[in-house]
Every structure is written in C-alpha cells, then in structure tokens.
Image 1: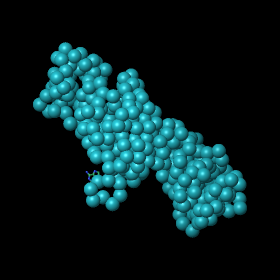
Image 2 (image 1 turned 90 degrees about the vertical axis):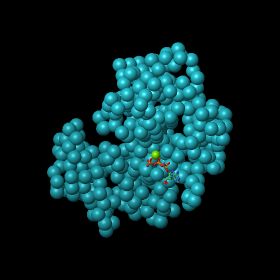
Image 3 (image 1 turned 120 degrees about the horizontal axis):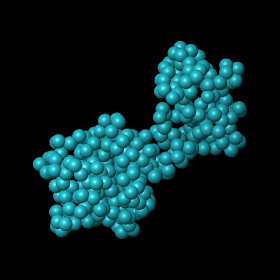
Image 4 (image 1 turned 135 degrees about the vertical axis):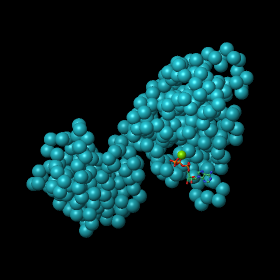
Length: 361
Ligand SMILES: Nc1ncnc2c1ncn2[C@@H]1O[C@H](COP(=O)(O)OP(=O)(O)OP(=O)(O)O)[C@@H](O)[C@H]1O
Ligand SMILES: [Mg+2]
C-alpha cells in the first residue's frame, strides 16, 4: 500500500509543440481509488504510463510512498497495470497467465499456488483455471487480466480503460466488481477512463484533464455540485449542463424574457468578462413553469422517455441566435414535439462562470 505523488510532472513527446501532460500536480492517498478522466488525447494514458515508468518524465517528479521513482525502471516500482486489451498470453492457461509474473520473479511454487488460487476465488475464476483465454468470454478475460495484477500484490494498481472491450451491460456489472474488489484489497489505484459516468461511480476522487492540464480533482459530488470551470461543468453530468454565455444586465444574466439574478459580488466578479457572463444549469435543476411565470420559452425538438422520467430537448431564440436546452422532467405533464414550454433554472442550482476565463464565480 502506498501514496502516489505527481509533482509538476510533465511529458513532452519528441517533436510535439506542447506537453502531452503539463505540470501535473496530484496527491493520491494510501488505498485511494483515483480516476483520471477527460476527452480523447487529453493525456490520461500518458500520465498513467509516466507513473508506471513506461514513459519519460521530462520535468518534475513522481513519488511512490514518498520515494522518488522518476528514474526507476518499471520493474522496480512495485506497480501492476491492467491494459485495455488485457494482453493475455494465448498459449497459456488462466492459471499460467496469472502465475507468469511470479514465476519470472522466482517466487516459490507453493506461494504462487496460494496467490493464484486466492485471486481466482476473489474473481470467481476457479472453474476456469485450466482453460485458455480463447475459451473465455470478454468479461472472464477481463477478470483474468485483473487476476494477473492482483497476484503480484503490488503497492499500486494502474488501469487504463480496462472495461472498454466489454458490452454495455457487462461494463456496468464489472465496474461495480472492480470498485468492490479495490475496496476489499485496499490497494491504491489509478484508473483511466474517458467515460464520466464510470469515473463518477467508481472513484473516491476524480481528476478531470483537458489538453494535458489537470482541470479539477475532487470527489464526484463536489465535481457535480461545484465544477471549477466551464469545461468541468459541461463534461460531468449526463445529459450535459445547459451552459450559455449571455449579456450582463441590471436584473442579472439576461436570457431575454428570463433574468437569472446575481448578487452584487457575482456581478462584480463577472464585470471583466466583456459585459457577459456564462451561466450553467443542469437539466435536472430546471423546472417547467407556467407561461406567465417569467420562464424562457423553448420549442420542444425531442422528448426522451426514460421510463422513470424524461429528457426534454428544445431550442430558444436568444441573443439573435438559436440556442439548445435540455430539461429533465417527470413523466406527468411530459410535453410533445413542437410544443412551446417555459423553463426556469432553480435559483439555488445555478452555476456562474467568468465569460472569458471560464472560471467559476
Ligand atoms: N508515443 C507518442 N508520441 C507522440 N505523441 C504521443 C504519443 N503518445 C501519445 N501522444 C500524444 O499525446 C497526447 C496525449 O495522449 P494520451 O494517449 O495520453 O491521451 P489519452 O487521454 O489517453 O486519450 P484516449 O482517451 O484517446 O486514450 C495526444 O495528443 C497524443 O497524440
Ligand atoms: Mg488513453
């Protein structure tokens, strides 16, 4: 078990114009499940590979349990990695796949046997130990890949999109299994995904990256409740938050017929944004109101009936253009396509951002 520290760690690939990972600062606690999330190409895998020792650290340092490992080779770092494509050895049985790394390390046979059987039990793979990978389902292969990491009893687990080969249903099942397993083993884990739902359901904390830069690292709840900038606000949550940049007016943020009131402090903080402010409100924190209640009229384009509730997509004429909005509503009073409805964000759940910097106000 161990802590992990990224200390202003950067990776600049040869010939690249900007760092793939730019001065990453991150403290991961002992036993913590930290998820790195962000869009494709934002530097997640590079960050993980730097920690694994598979990628150079061009500036800054990486520490495991307080010890500088920046220049240590992968095998001296006491970590185990699970990759997207599992990389199982096709000619070896499940047992041999799991035992392989230990054999290389000349671990005594009885010890290997104990660890493999323990892991197999934990992962419900006992009946498959003599099978070859090709005779396993995707989910079973995924568990073998986990087993190979577990038997090494590493200080840190690294996982790079380990569920991306599984179908949607199995992904959901497996992600809760991994989270449960991690809690049971208590091994510090860094987990990479581009799927924000996966990140939010699995991580103790979630680090959101964009263009090689860490945007925010916090608990799922804090990311959801108080996103630190416009990018995080739009990235976390599904359907995504409604985010619009609108003129600042006397009455607040001006959405035509709807004004989102601002405190004096908020208006002052927004001042330097060129007379504009960026306002965000989540679909689930938006109400359908009566036509006389001062809401913003939107024309319904699509209603997604989710069974329990519904997502209503629509557009409104705003500031000379057409802007899209989405509202979560219960199924009673669900509008129909083409209808005009009036929407209003719930006052306590409005997010404000500086129009130019995108930082939370
Ligand atoms: N070996 C390499 N040489 C040069 N550039 C690279 C190399 N590996 C990655 N990059 C670049 O570095 C950036 C970060 O890549 P990285 O693989 O870390 O992204 P990622 O967040 O894992 O994306 P994805 O979700 O698609 O896996 C990208 O712009 C990518 O093109
Ligand atoms: Mg990647």
